[in-house]
Image: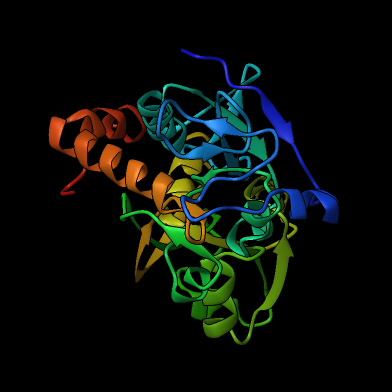
Length: 271
């Protein structure tokens, strides 16, 4: 497996870099980037497909033995292969991804970050075709007496900043004390330590977490009908066309099912 360096980036590049990252109609960026093969989309770093994501988000993207792996990472590897380059992962706060700032500043080409397609985010970035179905879920310690969001009045509910779980909790858990965390790892640590009484996030990551944390359980799923998409800078149709082609080809060939089963232990119900 190709080793992927993880670049931890916690601030946007200076304003000058934003100017230098101005793009043409083909969606490419100027500066140190280059074509991904003859006639391909321009990339912010020559020879690399730079993927902004927020770690950890197991099993979609997380670090193990110094390497970033996961379901999303394997899919982006297929896109990088199509472009004739290697994937490079940039670990960055999620807000910079979903707001479009990371694309506009030239920090990355693509984001595969377990990111739900929403109308609000569509104003900031362009999304690929959907590639994964998700919904919100509630996790808590076994025996807590919490079985639904209505049981959280006066209790602490952990959420992850700038996520659909954050939005769902603020809209539906009116009696709870909402405690916001920068990333999923901090949120789940707070659930485990008892800092919060429960946590809300996407069902895929929570079900994966309770496999190892057997004192905890997912007690409720909320049918929010979410779908994940990969994000690119608005107007970057050259790259978006490649992403959609690779996703469609992977589903048609069965490669998507193989990758899905590798990370979730079962094949998807449908594509």
